[in-house]
Length: 102
Image (cartoon, rainbow, N blue to C red; front, side, top):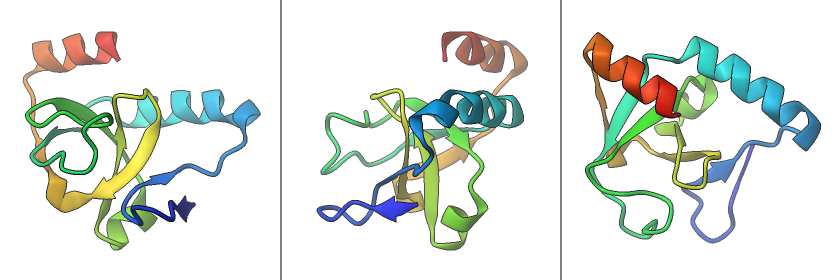
């Protein structure tokens, strides 16, 4: 994983494009019930919407650095500071609806 030069807060996965789809399927199957609400989208207006629920992907290395991996508005997973989000527990019907939508 490498961080962008401009923000140093968001980072794109370094997985090759051929493996990216398989990795996303694996990540989604492990993380179907992990969600967080965006609290602060400053400097990321095109990528995040404040108040929106996002899918969280497990990334232990990122978590150790105070980061959270989110599937953002681009449909790709990026790293953001954990302080921008709050993890939420959702009801089963809402989880199911968000899982189908994502």
